[in-house]
Image (cartoon, rainbow, N blue to C red; front, side, top):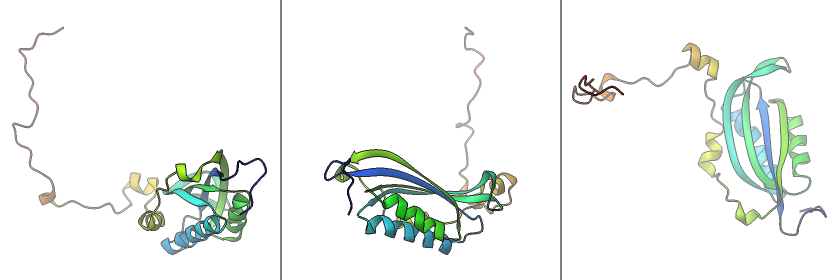
Length: 168
């Protein structure tokens, strides 16, 4: 593991990377990209702190002929060269249309930052969800509730208006 002369011994840098995948990327495609990025981070001695799938969203402007994209957020620790290697790998993947990395902190003690990612979180980040436009128009298939699932509300539960209260 290479260490910069600026870094204190035994510390790493904290980074955040957001990358956008093509909107038609399926669950296996997302899993492939996530596995590649996680492998690069771990191979270079880093550690994933957080991984989130922000879902399919409308882009501010057209990127590689796409108007929407699947946003993935990564927070991780790493040393010199980890960002360059991640971005080199992202450039080679056809599913990735844009990426951006920010250095959040340096000289971070890796033991002081707990990793909030396990296999379940990692697999959940690959799930595809309807985008906000589909949810707003009702085109997405939301879970349906049966009449038995909705609790009955008694008349006692409903608030009543008491006209005897003084007005201030």
